[in-house]
Amino acid sequence: MTNELPEHVRRNRAEWDRWAADFVANGEQNWRAGPGDETWGIWGIPESEARLLPDDLEGLDTIELGCGTGYVSAWLARRGARPVGIDNSEAQLATARRLQAEHGITFPLIHGNAESVPLPDASFDLAISEYGASIWADPYRWVPEAARLLRPGGGLIYLVNGTILMLCVPDSDAAADERLLRPYFGPHRLEWSDDDSVEFHLGYGDWIRLLRSNGFEVEDLVELRPAEDATTRYPYVTLDWARQWPSEEVWKARKRD
Ligand SMILES: C[S@@+](CC[C@H](N)C(=O)[O-])C[C@H]1O[C@@H](n2cnc3c(N)ncnc32)[C@H](O)[C@@H]1O
Image (tube, rainbow, N blue to C red):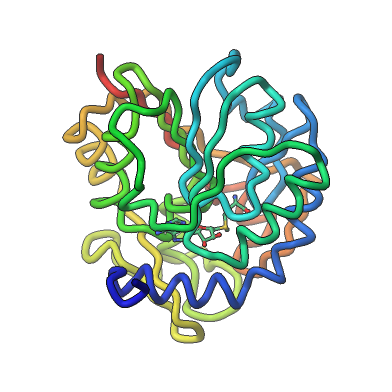
């Protein structure tokens, strides 16, 4: 079965199974956040400020594409949704299952590739991804798959690294430069020299064309700005940089009726 996966999915599965232990504490912390206390991304930006979630999630069927430890879906469940999570890493899902049991919030967790979800068309009202399939799966595969899974009028919300940030991050653990280090135009696939993972980062025009050609209307592009005293455990961007340019971006789109 593993050999049938696309090459980038196979490589990301191996890397995420290896990295999962480093994401347990973050998962535990985020699972503890109740409605109104949720925080997003590497700077922990409060939902009350970012306003990424719909006001009313009661009764909505949701799917998280690359759910990892599952905390975003737990937030949705606490707000009344019926979530499903899919993730490429069995090790990440093991943490998600343990945290489900500890918090008494259970929802289906599927081990699989968000580019090819084993569920029927038009099963969901909202698809969401925070640094999940949104950066680790091929957008030319996962966006059409999200469109297939959503009902007409369904929402798509996904958080990615800032586009400018990805042009300024060196291929090392060093923080983003204030110069553009790689071209904006060109292949959307990104590999780092010090691990075996594969990421995907599109430019703004490509995102808009991809979303629209798959039946979505773009509703918003939220450029997240951390607070003056925000901190992060990630080495690839400083607070000074992220206060000046968007280090994280959230696309909101809706499938046309
Ligand atoms: C940074 S985590 C984000 C998930 C969640 N927000 C969290 O922090 O627990 C990235 C997740 O995307 C998953 N992933 C990568 N490629 C995927 C794919 N093609 N399909 C589904 N999940 C994928 C990884 O296994 C990993 O668990």
